[in-house]
Image (cartoon, rainbow, N blue to C red; front, side):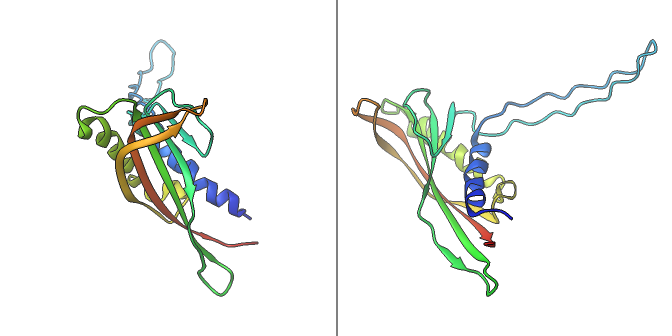
Length: 175
């Protein structure tokens, strides 16, 4: 039986998988049989997926402010309610994806900040069930702007990017 932690963490892992950029793999054509060498079948191509503008995607871990643009995915409080008389629970998993894009004020907010943040939203909404990790997942808030962090030395840092909030629904049956 699945434990609560496994079901909860699977949502965050699935979002990370949706965001990490994987380039396309081109189709390899078949090679006909010849000189007693059997035919080599074609290998289908695989389309690119993820957000190409992101260099790093982190789930719930400490991180440094290098390798920008970077997305960090962290949980925020969400309700758990009874879904039936047999113990089934309706769990709302909420989180925030902070996208840190650059250290200097953008020349064009739409190109430099909103475009990559929009790619994050598109990647999540491309599979709202997150590969089976949730019943449904939607983004609930889109907030481009300034992001304030403290670096490893405790110095305040101002970055540009923003937050994308999401909400995923799952059903959990305690054992």
